[in-house]
Length: 116
Image (cartoon, rainbow, N blue to C red; front, side, top):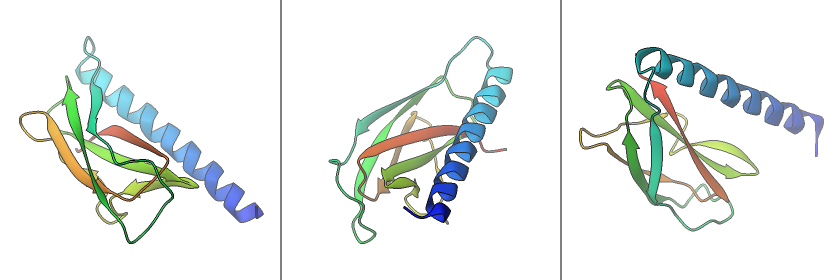
C-alpha cells in the first residue's frame, strides 16, 4: 500500500474522530441529560464498493436537537461519505425518520452533526 494512501486513511480517521467529538460536545451542551441515538432499520447487504450502484438505507434518530442532521458513511477500503461528497447531509424528518441511498460497503456508519 502506498504511503499516500496510508496518510490519507490516517487523516480521514482523525477527521472523523474530531467531527464525532465536536458533534457529541455540541449535542451534549444543549441536551445535557439526553443521549441522541441513531438506529438503522434498513441497510444494504454488505459488499465491495461500486460507484455505479446505490441502495436504500434508512433509520430513526431519537432525542436529537431539532437542527441535527446525519452524515452517512460506507466502508469500502476507506470510509466514503454517502451518498456523494457534494450531498453530505441527510435530513432527519419531523417524525424522526431518515432515509437516503448509499453505495455498497462492508460496514455502514452515521454521525449526528449540528446543522448550524
